[in-house]
Length: 263
Image (spheres, rainbow, N blue to C red):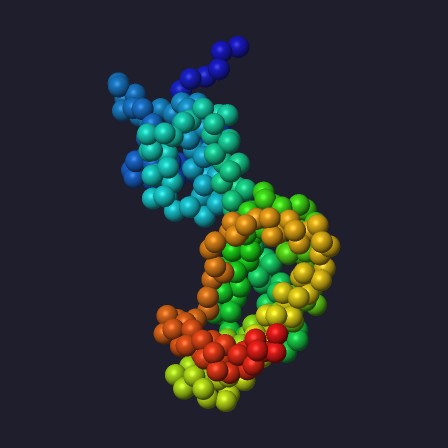
C-alpha cells in the first residue's frame, strides 16, 4: 500500500495533533512552510514536514524559543533524516536532563539549609546552581583522567558534609559582604579569613585522609594538569580585589604567617 505523499492542513493537523491555527502561524513566520497547490493555493504538507514539525515540538518542550528553533532548522547543516533528527533530539534532551538534575540538586541543598533554619536568599540558589554545574564539569574531567575511587572521594559527599559546607560558605560570604572595605589588618577581617582558611585546610586534610597512597600518587601524577577553570564566585570584582589584599596580609603578617613559621 502506497503511503500518502501530501496532506491538506486539516489532515495534517489531525495526523500530528497540532492545531490548524498553530500550523497557520508557523507558516506565517517561516518556521514550517508547506508547498502550495498550484491550482487552489491550498497548503499541502508532506511526510518530511511531519519530521520537521516533530523536531519543532521537541525543541519547544525543551524550552527553546521559536526564534531559536528557526535558527536550528534553517541552518545549512540541519538534516531532516529521521536517524539524524533523533540523534539531535536525544542530545538536546540529555542536556536538558542534566540541567534539570543540577537545578534539583541545588533546590534540595537549599531546602536542607532552610530546614536547619539557615537564612539564605535567592542569590545563593543561583550561585549554588552555577557551582553544581562547575562541579559536574569538573567531575567529568577527573573521570577521564583518574580512577573511580579518586572521583568518589573528591565528589561524593554525604548530606551532612554538604549541609555543613554550605552553611560555612554562607557564613563566609555574608561576612565578606559585611566587612568589605575595612582595612585589611582589621581584627574582625583577619578573624574571618583565619576561620575560612581553617575550614579550607580541614576540607583538604579530610579529602586526603580518605585516600590511600596509590590514590594520592594518582593525583600527583596529573602534574598540574587538573581542570583549570575556577569555581564561580559569589563576589563582585571589588570584593574579590579586597579579598586578595586581605589574604595577602593574612599570609605575610597575620595568623597565616605564624602558621607557616611553625611549620
